[in-house]
Image 1 (cartoon, rainbow, N blue to C red):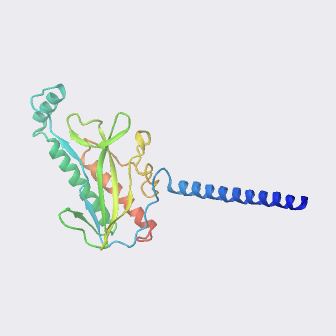
Image 2 (tube, rainbow, N blue to C red):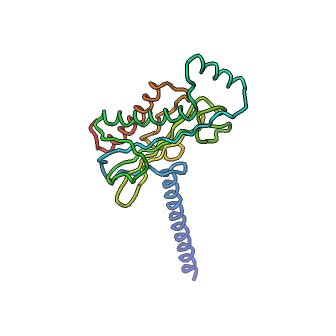
Image 3 (tube, rainbow, N blue to C red):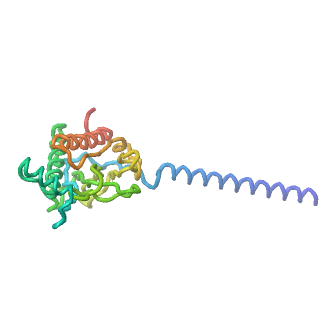
Length: 239
């Protein structure tokens, strides 16, 4: 009787030990999955194909006209400067100029690297077996809250940061490859906040709202360079 009791106790201990091992393994597996996903995002998707063409859409940037009837110091200075320099450029004209020049610069830089590229108007579906590059200009308000960037009076800080999205277009629709976003006001760096994306993290897509043409073109070349690096890592282009 005593021997049976001892065997029963030993068996119970073995069962408890086995359950503890199972629970520990499950917890370690869950932790590894959470680390792999990283801060609420997944790794960038691997492309299904080498694109026949890369379409570049117009990046989103809003323009706010000056309020009528207000003649503050800023408006007066701009009017005086406009008289001295000639016709003053409106916020709408400035925004349109930035959007157009940036898209043309990206397309030109990609074509220079032997990656077939073209502007995307948005009026028709992009052709299958292609990639679509989109983006939007972002700004930070006090407290590091993201908002869409605007050009014009009272439009916040003097800098804009650019969010970039890349998708592949297939017969079944559009599939995202990566989506960069700014990683807070301190680092001012796209890529780490959502996906920890190694293809876009480290690129500071920052541009002044009053940037000259050469700086806008330089930004287009920089974005195209990041896309080229992404294709290089996939083995679609030679180093």
